[in-house]
Length: 128
Image 1 (cartoon, rainbow, N blue to C red):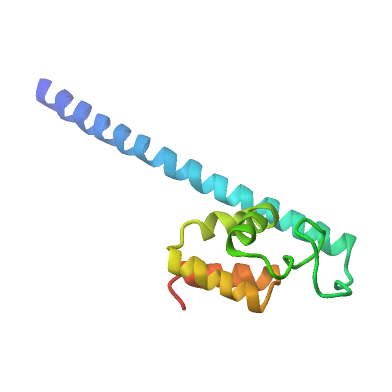
Image 2 (cartoon, rainbow, N blue to C red):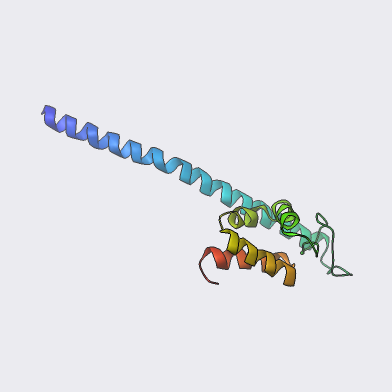
């Protein structure tokens, strides 16, 4: 009987340790989902508040719009991305330097939030 109790305790201890290792992963996933939800709410608010396209095609970094300002250098682009699309920025940070450069080049040719987010998703999924 003691061997059965010992086996059960060791097995229970191993399961508990495995669950403890999953907690940070689950909490991190929750943070990403929360950021994406906040971004989606902000986008929906932007569409309701200002459904018309920008008149000049360029906007300031923080304006309510569906685009980032044009002509930003890469460091400023990254700050604007973090401020305007925090969920996309979280995934952008997971990309390597070459992939981040590709996202920046996408921004330079098409500064719409949707295009930038799509490029990040494509690169994150390995679809260049």
